[in-house]
Amino acid sequence: MATGTVSLRYFILGLLARQTMSGYDIRRLLKSLSWLIGSPSSGSLYPILHSLLQEGLTTMEVIPSTERPPRKIYSITEAGRQALQAWLDRPVESNATLKAFVMRLLLVGSHSQPGLKTHLQRRRAQVADHQVALGEITGSLNAGTDLGQHLALRYGLALAAAELEWLDSTLESLSESPPPEEDVQSEGTVSAIRGIRSPD
Amino acid sequence: MATGTVSLRYFILGLLARQTMSGYDIRRLLKSLSWLIGSPSSGSLYPILHSLLQEGLTTMEVIPSTERPPRKIYSITEAGRQALQAWLDRPVESNATLKAFVMRLLLVGSHSQPGLKTHLQRRRAQVADHQVALGEITGSLNAGTDLGQHLALRYGLALAAAELEWLDSTLESLSESPPPEEDVQSEGTVSAIRGIRSPD
DNA sequence: ACACTCATGTAAGCTGTTACATGATTAA
DNA sequence: TTAATCATGTAACAGCTTACATGAGTGT
Image (tube, rainbow over all chains, first blue to last red; front, side):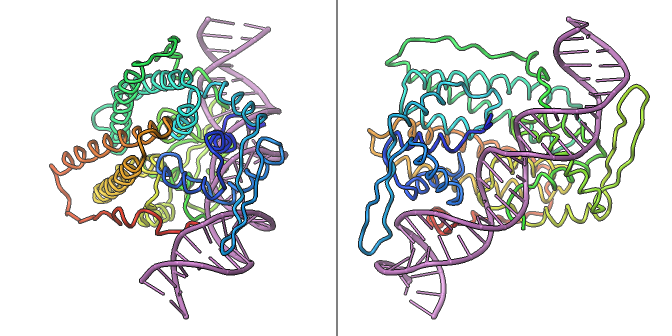
């Protein structure tokens, strides 16, 4: 039923939409960004590649080579592009992790320019909300409380502030050639954050 | 064989070392920090609580209550404290995620003051290394390249810079009542980062 | 000789989620 | 009456990692 996960599947499909690659190429690319998004093990990567192929979302070409293992180069198909677009169209969940954000940033930054701006604006709204929530908890903590928790909260606030700064300046610099604007509002301000959902 | 994972198990055990809590209490606490560390579902939390109890790392007391479901309050045992300490003593892997860092920050900040400083210094070294690595990739990217990748890298660099700033200022403010110093060096600088390990 | 890179893959297992179940109490 | 909070729990499954296997080439 694959509800929420970032689904490496679609991320990989998205990478193949940028350019054709082998499994090994994908691993190398992701390893270089592993701090932000982590890199999958071969045990998860290769099976995904197989299943994408079997479902017709990609095609594969074997490039043999003397003195080297043959490489299997995957390309996205038209069906694959449609599946990818369908996935990109459904918005990210509001509890999206940093990892999920960066993954989408990579894809959406390479494909749809309008989607990029929307993505950054959505993130902005989410981070801003979280910042307020963390700030409230910090405020409600009597001074003597637990050092660890205090530090964790301050850390979170510092990161949130930095991220907002980056998002704002990036959005601004993208506005130099502005695609049609679309308003994105903070999707549920403070009062709505704490405990609307019983996630159980 | 439970190699690398953050192991929610030990994190929960660590929370119980700070104070006795019920499963529900833990969920509420973690939900408030869910942006940073995510909060586990009941489907993973309760089984962990059961297994900690069964292995004698915790004890449990049922607090009945008319008109409310009974609460099960867990307390850590001496054996539990030892197991926790043993776990805290083995250092975090060098590819530690933000989540793993914050989890340990919460625990170590509440328990061992010397461990806290070490933990922050280790993180500093790791983030600094990653920053350099990201910077190198950014530099080696010819200007025309993929917008998504470019943005992701800039994002990573911005976060790394902010984190280093926070770590430095926090370490400084902790030095006002300084526990014995211990040198922590950057554990493998740039050249060592790219590809020493074949993780497969 | 040893280890590491390139390049693929499989099987077993751990960790966690989703979705359900219970059941009384309180607020809209 | 509908839903939400409090509070616990289980069964089924998704997703990923670990550890292994192959095998030639290159570097120390």
